[in-house]
Every structure is written in structure tokens, then in C-alpha cells.
Length: 387
Ligand code: UD1
Figure (cartoon, rainbow, N blue to C red):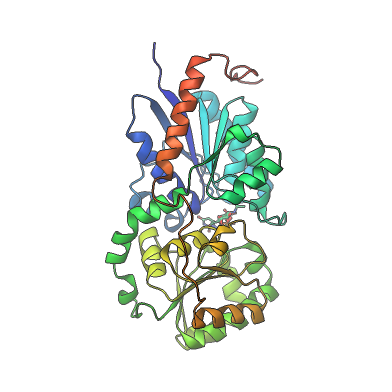
């Protein structure tokens, strides 16, 4: 008798939600072929970091919330693994789908792989070549245990091939985060959030900061604000603050005067639509995020990335991204370049066209059909509790 192909979909932290949303929308279109369950690990748990994204992206409520919360890397990863293992054993999926590079991504990929369940990794192959970033470890190890690797840009396939991943597992399907952006950008702009904050479109900057290397070390944070303060003299800067960054702001000497002079406006984390609208109408985005480098590229907004490396090189070669590092002098040089105009038209990278999820689901469909045709698809045997 025909049995739908069972997918266990994993989200954990804020940047995962906009990547999974278009995949869910696509799976819903074919209920005869696919049965799926959505697991939220609870890595991000504040309403502003999680719930609002489900509402705004039209995502179903998670079927299961593992509620793991914060902790050291080992504690958080281990808590996700223990709780997720029970889910896999209970629901017996045919494949576990993970996105991005957060601790939840690696934890769930490892669990699935050890239970002999196939793993699909969406946004595979990105490499910063900086192993001090926790995300780099998560990316490399997740890719090593994945059976289907969906890539967003050409560099990713090169990286995976160099690491010995078989070419037949790699599928260049495009960028699901951009599927979500394109689906929501008109709605985001209609909200007119800049105007509501008394900002003039095209005459303000947006700042985000949350990388441990930038916010956990007070000296590094202060140096960034040397440069940010000078840019704020040219145009007001809006700063939605990630929870991890709050303590750094409280102990900083450089931030308070900027707020007092009205040059820096702090907010709690914004919802997806308001943040997208703010970015779309801004003159420049300053960030240390991964995904924002991609979103600004598609919006055509200049982005100054305050990191030494990027795992998303296509945003530099094709897009609007300038990798300015964390030295104040270089950040200000980047800002001077933005003010002059970079002198070239930015391009939207190949396959960042709003149809990545459609391609991913098509590959999964073919995989499901092949698996249905060969009952012993995994030579290691079926999942069993306690093995
Ligand atoms: C995580 C990801 C990072 C991603 C970022 C996006 C890892 C290793 N890092 O970093 O790749 O870019 O999410 O936001 O997986 N906190 C709250 N409320 C929340 C969540 C976190 O207050 O809902 C605070 C807690 O103090 C916590 C800290 O933020 O200790 C860090 O959270 P954590 O999930 O460990 O990492 P992020 O810095 O958010």
C-alpha cells in the first residue's frame, strides 16, 4: 500500500524560520506524496525571536517544541540531541530536513544520521574558513552526514567537492531565504515602518550585531562603535538589538552618547516584515549577520559586513556586500566607498529567483520515488530504539 514520504522538519533559531517557511508552503501543495512534521528545538524562545516569525510567514505552529533554551554550546547541542532523538524514534521519518548553520542544525543532523535516517541540509557548503565561528563547525559537520545537500551559490559546491562530498548528493537549487524575501517585500514596504519611526527613506542606516567575536569582548565592541559613531554623524542609525548584545550595550561607554544625541535608535528585535521594510528603504546596512548579506544584495542596498570573512562570497562578487572587517579605519573606508557609490551595478545571484523551495521539493520527490523503488535504500538498516 502507498505510504507518503515522511519528512521531519527542524527549526531552532531566528534565521531558520524564513528558510523553512517556503519549503513548508511547497510541501503542502502535494499532500499525497509528503507527510511532514515540524519540530522547533526552542533554541530561540523569546516571542520577538520566534513566535512573530511564524505568524508573519504564515507558518503552522510547530507540532513539537523541544524547549531546550539557552546554554553553553555543549549543553545546548546535547539537549537538542537528546530530545530530538525521541522524536525520530517515535515518528520514524524517511528524512530529516535541517536548514542553515545553528547549533540545532548540527544537533538534529547528527541524531538522524546515527539513527540511519537520511538528512537533507538546506544551505549546504558555505564556508568562512574560520573555525573559531561556531557556525563553521556546524556547517562542516552537518554537510559530512547529509545525504541531500542543497546549495545557494557556486562556491558551496566547490567547497563540498573539496571536502570529498559525492557530486551526486549536491543540488544547486538557489536560496530559500530569498524565496521568502520576494514573497513578502511588497507587504513589508507597504507597512511604511521608516515613516512611522520619523525616518526619511534613503537617509538612514540599519545596524545589527550579534556575533560572539564582536559583542562578547568589550574592547572589540568599543572599537566597532568608534566607527559606527562616525557614520552616525552622517546619518541616523536604527539598531534592533539581539538579546545576546544587550549586556554589551549596557557596559559600553560609546553607545550612550549616540543614543542621547538621537543618532542611534535602539529597538527590541523586530519582526520579519518591519525589519525587511526598514532594510529595503535604508541607505546602508551595517551588520555581522550571514543572511543579511544576502538580503541586502537582493534589495540592492549597500551592506558593510563587519567581519573578517564571509561564507557567502557571491554577495561580494555579484551583490552589494563590502567585507570591511572590524578595524574602525576599514569600516570608515567602506562607508566612504558607499557614499561615493561603488561604480558598478549589483546583480542578483543565479537562482535567487523565488523558486528555490520548488526545486528542493522536486529533488526530494525524486529521492522519495527512488527510495520507494528500493526497500533497502539504507544498507545500515532501519531505525530501532536503543541500537
Ligand atoms: C544563534 C546562532 C547564530 C545565528 C543567531 C541568529 C548558534 C551557534 N548560533 O546565535 O548562528 O546567527 O542565532 O540570531 O547556533 N537569547 C534570548 N532569547 C532567545 C534566544 C537567545 O534571550 O530567544 C539570549 C540568551 O542569553 C542566549 C543568547 O541570547 O544565551 C545566545 O543565544 P544562542 O541561541 O546561544 O545563540 P545566538 O547568539 O542567538
